[in-house]
Length: 425
Image (cartoon, rainbow, N blue to C red; front, side, top):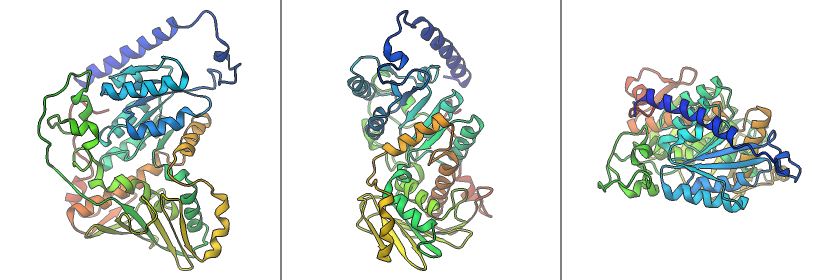
Protein backbone atom coordinates (compact mmCIF):
# COMPACT_ATOMS: atom_id res chain seq x y z
CA UNK A 1 0.00 0.00 0.00
CA UNK A 2 1.46 3.39 -0.97
CA UNK A 3 1.96 6.07 1.73
CA UNK A 4 -0.55 8.44 0.13
CA UNK A 5 -3.15 5.69 0.19
CA UNK A 6 -2.39 5.09 3.85
CA UNK A 7 -3.07 8.75 4.54
CA UNK A 8 -6.34 8.69 2.62
CA UNK A 9 -7.33 5.51 4.48
CA UNK A 10 -6.67 7.17 7.81
CA UNK A 11 -8.67 10.23 6.81
CA UNK A 12 -11.59 8.03 5.77
CA UNK A 13 -11.44 5.98 8.95
CA UNK A 14 -11.38 9.08 11.14
CA UNK A 15 -14.50 10.36 9.46
CA UNK A 16 -16.16 6.98 9.70
CA UNK A 17 -15.36 6.75 13.39
CA UNK A 18 -17.02 10.09 14.07
CA UNK A 19 -20.13 9.02 12.21
CA UNK A 20 -20.24 5.69 13.99
CA UNK A 21 -19.87 7.35 17.37
CA UNK A 22 -22.69 9.77 16.61
CA UNK A 23 -24.97 7.01 15.38
CA UNK A 24 -24.41 4.91 18.48
CA UNK A 25 -25.39 7.51 21.12
CA UNK A 26 -28.12 5.93 23.27
CA UNK A 27 -31.43 7.70 23.76
CA UNK A 28 -31.53 6.56 27.40
CA UNK A 29 -28.35 7.48 29.28
CA UNK A 30 -27.33 4.87 31.87
CA UNK A 31 -26.23 5.98 35.32
CA UNK A 32 -22.64 4.83 34.80
CA UNK A 33 -22.36 7.18 31.82
CA UNK A 34 -22.97 10.03 34.27
CA UNK A 35 -20.61 8.67 36.89
CA UNK A 36 -23.43 8.06 39.38
CA UNK A 37 -22.49 4.49 40.22
CA UNK A 38 -18.99 5.35 41.38
CA UNK A 39 -17.41 4.97 37.94
CA UNK A 40 -15.77 7.90 36.16
CA UNK A 41 -18.05 10.07 34.04
CA UNK A 42 -17.09 10.29 30.34
CA UNK A 43 -15.57 13.75 30.79
CA UNK A 44 -13.09 12.33 33.32
CA UNK A 45 -12.58 8.91 31.76
CA UNK A 46 -9.43 8.01 29.83
CA UNK A 47 -10.28 5.76 26.90
CA UNK A 48 -7.44 3.40 26.08
CA UNK A 49 -6.61 1.16 23.13
CA UNK A 50 -3.86 -1.41 22.68
CA UNK A 51 -1.54 -2.14 19.75
CA UNK A 52 0.40 -5.41 19.68
CA UNK A 53 -0.43 -6.45 23.23
CA UNK A 54 1.34 -9.76 23.81
CA UNK A 55 2.60 -11.46 26.97
CA UNK A 56 4.48 -8.47 28.39
CA UNK A 57 1.77 -6.11 27.21
CA UNK A 58 -0.94 -8.13 28.96
CA UNK A 59 0.97 -7.80 32.23
CA UNK A 60 1.04 -4.02 31.84
CA UNK A 61 -2.58 -3.95 30.66
CA UNK A 62 -3.67 -5.89 33.73
CA UNK A 63 -2.34 -3.07 35.91
CA UNK A 64 -3.96 -0.45 33.69
CA UNK A 65 -7.36 -2.16 33.88
CA UNK A 66 -7.23 -1.71 37.65
CA UNK A 67 -6.96 2.07 37.27
CA UNK A 68 -10.07 3.99 38.24
CA UNK A 69 -11.32 6.18 35.41
CA UNK A 70 -9.57 4.20 32.64
CA UNK A 71 -11.56 2.20 30.11
CA UNK A 72 -9.89 -0.14 27.60
CA UNK A 73 -12.00 -0.43 24.45
CA UNK A 74 -10.05 -2.05 21.62
CA UNK A 75 -7.37 -4.64 20.95
CA UNK A 76 -5.36 -4.31 17.75
CA UNK A 77 -2.91 -6.97 16.63
CA UNK A 78 -1.79 -8.51 13.36
CA UNK A 79 -2.22 -11.96 14.97
CA UNK A 80 -5.78 -13.17 15.48
CA UNK A 81 -4.94 -15.29 18.53
CA UNK A 82 -3.37 -12.36 20.38
CA UNK A 83 -6.17 -9.90 19.74
CA UNK A 84 -8.72 -12.51 20.79
CA UNK A 85 -6.77 -13.20 23.99
CA UNK A 86 -6.80 -9.51 24.90
CA UNK A 87 -10.51 -9.19 24.07
CA UNK A 88 -11.31 -12.12 26.33
CA UNK A 89 -9.16 -10.64 29.10
CA UNK A 90 -10.82 -7.21 28.86
CA UNK A 91 -14.38 -8.52 28.44
CA UNK A 92 -13.83 -10.73 31.47
CA UNK A 93 -12.72 -7.72 33.50
CA UNK A 94 -15.70 -5.57 32.47
CA UNK A 95 -18.18 -8.48 32.29
CA UNK A 96 -19.37 -7.57 28.81
CA UNK A 97 -18.44 -8.25 25.18
CA UNK A 98 -17.64 -4.68 24.18
CA UNK A 99 -13.92 -4.83 23.44
CA UNK A 100 -13.48 -4.32 19.68
CA UNK A 101 -10.76 -6.14 17.73
CA UNK A 102 -8.79 -4.72 14.80
CA UNK A 103 -6.06 -6.13 12.60
CA UNK A 104 -5.31 -2.72 11.10
CA UNK A 105 -3.99 -0.18 13.62
CA UNK A 106 -5.18 2.71 11.44
CA UNK A 107 -8.73 1.74 12.36
CA UNK A 108 -7.84 2.14 16.03
CA UNK A 109 -5.94 5.40 15.45
CA UNK A 110 -8.86 6.76 13.42
CA UNK A 111 -11.23 6.57 16.39
CA UNK A 112 -11.82 9.99 17.94
CA UNK A 113 -12.98 8.52 21.24
CA UNK A 114 -9.60 6.97 22.09
CA UNK A 115 -7.37 9.19 24.24
CA UNK A 116 -4.30 7.00 24.67
CA UNK A 117 -2.69 3.81 23.41
CA UNK A 118 -0.61 1.07 24.96
CA UNK A 119 2.04 -0.06 22.43
CA UNK A 120 3.76 -3.36 23.22
CA UNK A 121 4.70 -4.70 19.79
CA UNK A 122 8.14 -6.03 18.93
CA UNK A 123 11.05 -3.58 18.85
CA UNK A 124 10.70 -2.93 15.11
CA UNK A 125 7.29 -1.24 15.50
CA UNK A 126 7.67 0.73 18.75
CA UNK A 127 8.85 4.05 17.34
CA UNK A 128 6.70 4.16 14.20
CA UNK A 129 3.51 3.11 15.99
CA UNK A 130 4.16 5.73 18.69
CA UNK A 131 4.77 8.46 16.11
CA UNK A 132 1.61 7.59 14.16
CA UNK A 133 -0.38 7.55 17.40
CA UNK A 134 0.90 10.99 18.38
CA UNK A 135 0.00 12.39 14.98
CA UNK A 136 -3.49 10.93 15.44
CA UNK A 137 -3.82 12.87 18.70
CA UNK A 138 -3.20 10.00 21.14
CA UNK A 139 -1.04 9.92 24.26
CA UNK A 140 1.34 6.97 24.32
CA UNK A 141 2.65 4.37 26.75
CA UNK A 142 5.29 2.44 24.79
CA UNK A 143 7.30 -0.55 25.89
CA UNK A 144 11.06 -0.44 25.54
CA UNK A 145 13.27 -0.38 23.59
CA UNK A 146 11.41 2.56 22.08
CA UNK A 147 13.53 2.74 18.93
CA UNK A 148 15.62 0.38 16.84
CA UNK A 149 18.18 3.08 16.03
CA UNK A 150 19.29 6.58 17.14
CA UNK A 151 17.09 8.19 14.55
CA UNK A 152 13.97 6.39 15.75
CA UNK A 153 14.41 7.72 19.29
CA UNK A 154 15.13 11.22 18.02
CA UNK A 155 12.09 11.24 15.73
CA UNK A 156 9.87 9.82 18.46
CA UNK A 157 10.88 12.46 21.02
CA UNK A 158 10.63 15.28 18.48
CA UNK A 159 7.14 14.15 17.47
CA UNK A 160 5.87 13.89 21.05
CA UNK A 161 7.11 17.41 21.76
CA UNK A 162 5.81 18.82 18.49
CA UNK A 163 2.31 17.43 19.04
CA UNK A 164 2.32 18.02 22.84
CA UNK A 165 1.52 14.39 23.60
CA UNK A 166 2.06 12.69 26.94
CA UNK A 167 4.57 9.86 26.56
CA UNK A 168 5.70 7.19 29.00
CA UNK A 169 8.47 4.76 28.09
CA UNK A 170 7.99 1.33 29.66
CA UNK A 171 11.10 1.72 31.83
CA UNK A 172 9.02 1.14 34.94
CA UNK A 173 11.98 0.78 37.30
CA UNK A 174 11.89 4.59 37.54
CA UNK A 175 8.70 4.07 39.51
CA UNK A 176 9.92 1.19 41.73
CA UNK A 177 10.91 1.91 45.33
CA UNK A 178 14.23 0.10 45.68
CA UNK A 179 15.61 1.69 42.50
CA UNK A 180 14.25 5.11 43.50
CA UNK A 181 15.99 4.75 46.86
CA UNK A 182 19.33 3.89 45.26
CA UNK A 183 19.02 6.89 42.91
CA UNK A 184 18.08 9.11 45.87
CA UNK A 185 21.30 8.17 47.68
CA UNK A 186 23.34 9.00 44.58
CA UNK A 187 21.63 12.30 43.79
CA UNK A 188 21.41 13.59 47.37
CA UNK A 189 25.14 13.32 48.03
CA UNK A 190 24.74 10.58 50.64
CA UNK A 191 27.38 8.54 48.78
CA UNK A 192 29.71 11.50 48.56
CA UNK A 193 31.04 12.58 45.18
CA UNK A 194 29.74 10.11 42.60
CA UNK A 195 32.48 8.52 40.49
CA UNK A 196 31.30 5.18 38.98
CA UNK A 197 27.98 3.73 37.84
CA UNK A 198 27.36 0.10 36.86
CA UNK A 199 24.54 -0.96 34.51
CA UNK A 200 23.75 -4.60 33.72
CA UNK A 201 22.87 -5.85 30.25
CA UNK A 202 22.12 -9.13 28.48
CA UNK A 203 24.94 -10.89 26.67
CA UNK A 204 25.54 -8.91 23.49
CA UNK A 205 24.91 -10.64 20.17
CA UNK A 206 24.14 -9.85 16.55
CA UNK A 207 22.66 -12.30 14.05
CA UNK A 208 21.97 -11.62 10.37
CA UNK A 209 20.62 -15.14 9.81
CA UNK A 210 17.12 -16.04 8.58
CA UNK A 211 15.02 -18.84 9.99
CA UNK A 212 13.85 -21.38 7.37
CA UNK A 213 11.01 -20.11 5.22
CA UNK A 214 7.51 -21.43 5.96
CA UNK A 215 4.21 -20.84 4.13
CA UNK A 216 2.64 -17.56 5.14
CA UNK A 217 -0.68 -17.90 6.98
CA UNK A 218 -3.85 -16.12 5.93
CA UNK A 219 -3.57 -12.39 6.67
CA UNK A 220 -6.40 -12.51 9.17
CA UNK A 221 -4.53 -15.19 11.12
CA UNK A 222 -1.22 -13.34 10.92
CA UNK A 223 -0.48 -10.42 8.62
CA UNK A 224 3.22 -11.11 8.09
CA UNK A 225 3.90 -8.03 5.97
CA UNK A 226 2.35 -5.81 8.64
CA UNK A 227 4.19 -7.71 11.41
CA UNK A 228 7.51 -6.88 9.73
CA UNK A 229 6.43 -3.29 9.16
CA UNK A 230 9.48 -1.02 8.67
CA UNK A 231 11.95 -3.89 9.20
CA UNK A 232 13.69 -5.37 6.13
CA UNK A 233 11.77 -8.19 4.49
CA UNK A 234 12.54 -11.79 5.41
CA UNK A 235 10.52 -14.99 4.84
CA UNK A 236 7.87 -15.98 7.37
CA UNK A 237 8.64 -18.43 10.14
CA UNK A 238 6.22 -19.03 13.00
CA UNK A 239 9.00 -18.74 15.57
CA UNK A 240 9.35 -15.02 14.86
CA UNK A 241 5.75 -14.19 15.71
CA UNK A 242 5.85 -16.44 18.77
CA UNK A 243 8.59 -14.31 20.33
CA UNK A 244 11.60 -15.85 18.62
CA UNK A 245 12.65 -12.57 16.96
CA UNK A 246 15.09 -11.65 19.74
CA UNK A 247 18.72 -11.53 18.68
CA UNK A 248 18.14 -10.81 14.99
CA UNK A 249 19.72 -7.50 14.06
CA UNK A 250 16.76 -6.40 11.87
CA UNK A 251 14.22 -7.06 14.64
CA UNK A 252 15.99 -6.51 17.98
CA UNK A 253 17.46 -3.13 18.98
CA UNK A 254 21.11 -2.47 19.67
CA UNK A 255 22.76 -5.93 19.67
CA UNK A 256 20.37 -6.82 22.54
CA UNK A 257 22.02 -4.13 24.70
CA UNK A 258 18.72 -2.29 25.04
CA UNK A 259 16.82 -5.34 26.29
CA UNK A 260 18.02 -4.49 29.82
CA UNK A 261 20.19 -1.44 29.15
CA UNK A 262 17.17 0.72 28.39
CA UNK A 263 16.31 0.16 32.08
CA UNK A 264 19.73 0.10 33.75
CA UNK A 265 21.54 2.77 31.73
CA UNK A 266 18.42 4.89 32.20
CA UNK A 267 18.74 4.50 35.99
CA UNK A 268 22.42 5.43 35.82
CA UNK A 269 21.56 8.52 33.78
CA UNK A 270 19.05 9.50 36.47
CA UNK A 271 21.50 8.83 39.31
CA UNK A 272 24.10 11.04 37.60
CA UNK A 273 21.60 13.87 37.03
CA UNK A 274 22.24 13.30 33.31
CA UNK A 275 18.71 12.96 31.90
CA UNK A 276 19.49 15.67 29.34
CA UNK A 277 22.77 14.27 28.06
CA UNK A 278 24.78 11.07 27.46
CA UNK A 279 28.36 9.87 27.96
CA UNK A 280 31.04 11.39 25.74
CA UNK A 281 33.23 8.29 25.26
CA UNK A 282 32.50 4.58 24.80
CA UNK A 283 35.13 1.83 24.77
CA UNK A 284 34.41 -1.92 24.49
CA UNK A 285 36.34 -4.56 26.44
CA UNK A 286 34.97 -7.98 25.55
CA UNK A 287 31.32 -8.01 26.61
CA UNK A 288 31.74 -4.90 28.77
CA UNK A 289 31.62 -1.28 27.58
CA UNK A 290 33.25 1.52 29.57
CA UNK A 291 31.81 4.98 29.08
CA UNK A 292 32.48 8.36 30.64
CA UNK A 293 30.37 11.49 31.12
CA UNK A 294 31.59 15.06 30.67
CA UNK A 295 31.52 15.49 34.47
CA UNK A 296 34.05 12.67 34.83
CA UNK A 297 31.66 10.01 36.14
CA UNK A 298 32.34 6.55 34.70
CA UNK A 299 29.61 4.26 33.39
CA UNK A 300 30.39 0.53 33.24
CA UNK A 301 27.91 -1.40 31.06
CA UNK A 302 28.45 -5.05 31.88
CA UNK A 303 26.88 -8.50 31.46
CA UNK A 304 24.03 -9.42 33.81
CA UNK A 305 24.07 -11.62 36.95
CA UNK A 306 27.17 -10.14 38.56
CA UNK A 307 25.56 -9.02 41.81
CA UNK A 308 23.14 -11.80 42.72
CA UNK A 309 20.27 -9.32 43.03
CA UNK A 310 18.09 -10.61 40.24
CA UNK A 311 17.73 -9.10 36.79
CA UNK A 312 18.63 -5.49 35.97
CA UNK A 313 21.05 -4.83 38.85
CA UNK A 314 22.72 -1.42 39.15
CA UNK A 315 25.49 -0.15 41.41
CA UNK A 316 26.31 3.48 42.22
CA UNK A 317 29.67 4.35 43.81
CA UNK A 318 30.78 7.56 45.50
CA UNK A 319 33.88 8.48 47.50
CA UNK A 320 31.95 8.01 50.76
CA UNK A 321 29.78 4.98 50.03
CA UNK A 322 28.03 2.76 47.52
CA UNK A 323 24.63 1.16 46.88
CA UNK A 324 23.47 -1.71 44.67
CA UNK A 325 20.05 -3.18 43.96
CA UNK A 326 18.14 -5.26 41.41
CA UNK A 327 14.81 -6.85 40.67
CA UNK A 328 14.77 -8.97 43.83
CA UNK A 329 14.14 -5.70 45.66
CA UNK A 330 17.09 -6.33 47.97
CA UNK A 331 19.50 -3.49 48.66
CA UNK A 332 23.16 -3.68 49.60
CA UNK A 333 24.96 -0.53 50.65
CA UNK A 334 27.78 1.07 52.60
CA UNK A 335 27.75 2.61 55.12
CA UNK A 336 24.91 0.60 56.68
CA UNK A 337 23.52 3.72 58.35
CA UNK A 338 22.14 4.83 54.97
CA UNK A 339 19.45 2.15 55.19
CA UNK A 340 17.57 4.34 57.67
CA UNK A 341 15.99 6.29 54.81
CA UNK A 342 14.72 3.16 53.06
CA UNK A 343 11.22 3.37 54.57
CA UNK A 344 10.35 6.26 52.27
CA UNK A 345 10.60 3.94 49.25
CA UNK A 346 8.39 0.96 50.01
CA UNK A 347 7.59 -0.60 46.63
CA UNK A 348 9.95 -3.17 45.17
CA UNK A 349 10.00 -5.73 42.37
CA UNK A 350 9.06 -4.96 38.76
CA UNK A 351 5.32 -4.22 38.97
CA UNK A 352 4.42 -1.43 36.47
CA UNK A 353 1.32 -0.29 38.41
CA UNK A 354 2.86 2.96 39.70
CA UNK A 355 4.37 3.67 36.29
CA UNK A 356 0.95 3.26 34.69
CA UNK A 357 -0.63 5.49 37.34
CA UNK A 358 1.98 8.16 36.62
CA UNK A 359 1.08 7.98 32.92
CA UNK A 360 -2.64 8.45 33.54
CA UNK A 361 -2.05 11.21 36.10
CA UNK A 362 0.01 13.09 33.52
CA UNK A 363 -2.66 12.62 30.85
CA UNK A 364 -5.03 14.45 33.18
CA UNK A 365 -2.54 17.15 34.22
CA UNK A 366 -0.64 17.32 30.89
CA UNK A 367 2.54 17.10 32.93
CA UNK A 368 5.77 15.21 32.25
CA UNK A 369 5.90 11.52 33.07
CA UNK A 370 8.77 9.86 34.94
CA UNK A 371 10.06 8.34 31.68
CA UNK A 372 9.01 11.06 29.26
CA UNK A 373 10.14 11.31 25.65
CA UNK A 374 13.25 13.39 26.34
CA UNK A 375 14.38 11.15 29.22
CA UNK A 376 13.87 8.14 26.94
CA UNK A 377 15.74 9.80 24.09
CA UNK A 378 18.97 10.47 25.98
CA UNK A 379 19.07 7.11 27.77
CA UNK A 380 18.32 5.19 24.56
CA UNK A 381 20.90 7.22 22.62
CA UNK A 382 23.50 6.32 25.26
CA UNK A 383 22.58 2.64 24.84
CA UNK A 384 22.74 2.78 21.06
CA UNK A 385 26.10 4.59 21.15
CA UNK A 386 27.47 1.86 23.43
CA UNK A 387 26.12 -0.86 21.13
CA UNK A 388 27.72 0.76 18.08
CA UNK A 389 31.04 0.97 19.90
CA UNK A 390 30.80 -2.74 20.72
CA UNK A 391 29.85 -3.70 17.17
CA UNK A 392 32.75 -1.72 15.72
CA UNK A 393 35.15 -2.95 18.40
CA UNK A 394 36.74 0.41 19.08
CA UNK A 395 36.59 3.49 21.27
CA UNK A 396 34.20 6.19 20.10
CA UNK A 397 33.96 9.85 21.08
CA UNK A 398 30.47 11.33 21.12
CA UNK A 399 28.95 14.81 21.14
CA UNK A 400 25.73 14.44 23.19
CA UNK A 401 24.48 17.92 22.27
CA UNK A 402 24.59 17.21 18.53
CA UNK A 403 24.09 13.45 19.01
CA UNK A 404 26.89 12.59 16.60
CA UNK A 405 30.15 10.68 16.86
CA UNK A 406 33.23 12.83 16.42
CA UNK A 407 35.41 12.08 13.38
CA UNK A 408 33.91 8.64 12.71
CA UNK A 409 31.82 8.40 9.53
CA UNK A 410 31.23 4.66 9.90
CA UNK A 411 29.80 5.03 13.39
CA UNK A 412 27.59 7.94 12.29
CA UNK A 413 26.17 5.89 9.41
CA UNK A 414 25.05 3.30 11.97
CA UNK A 415 22.83 5.82 13.79
CA UNK A 416 20.03 5.37 11.25
CA UNK A 417 18.88 3.02 8.51
CA UNK A 418 16.26 3.05 5.79
CA UNK A 419 12.77 1.79 6.57
CA UNK A 420 10.96 -0.64 4.31
CA UNK A 421 8.35 1.11 2.17
CA UNK A 422 5.65 2.11 2.78
CA UNK A 423 6.08 1.78 6.55
CA UNK A 424 7.17 5.19 7.66
CA UNK A 425 5.46 8.17 9.30
